[in-house]
Image (cartoon, rainbow, N blue to C red; front, side, top):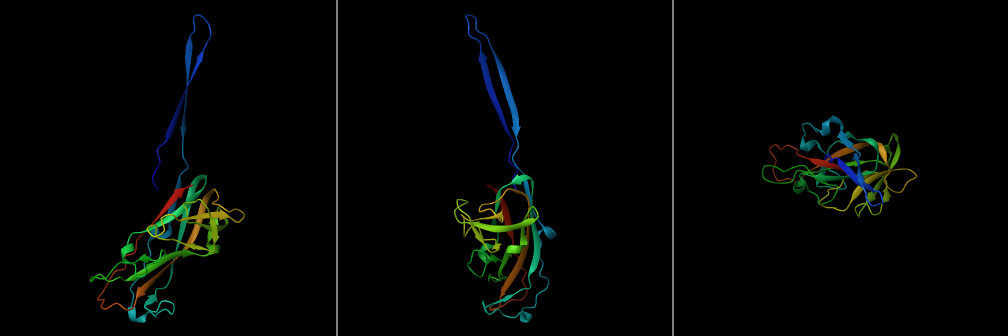
Length: 217
């Protein structure tokens, strides 16, 4: 998160007395306007390690038969603010050109030495895995940069390059737009899918990388 500069407001008020010999005195009013500050963080420093993977031991998936799923991993994503604040989240996949499926929620895992895509991964959460200030929260989705919001059953990060106007927000159960809060907690399920139709793989390193950004509303 970028630190925003402090804003200083100086107002100049002039009092003028009425008379033949008018005089004046100045009153200077100054103050510092400090914006809210929120800090996002991930457990395990945002590291997801699938360990050593034996491709023949991975069963194909019926829904995506040319891919095999890796066991899911979990991370806890938190946002801590110094006062109740309305915010939304976006994500950018920094290996976007390596994804094997062109979908907004599919983030690339890198390529083989010959340039073939290794697969993709997603980072999603269930409806029950989001809380605001330790209370159950709904996930909200906007496709028009926050102009309108709709509840969705759980959520998942989308690549900002595919959905540039989309935002993910969070609301208390009685509200229809993002709620001001000091704390957000999300349990992310990170699942990877590897292509099982690659022509040749000697050895390859998974190389997924995502940036999650907080936007103030």
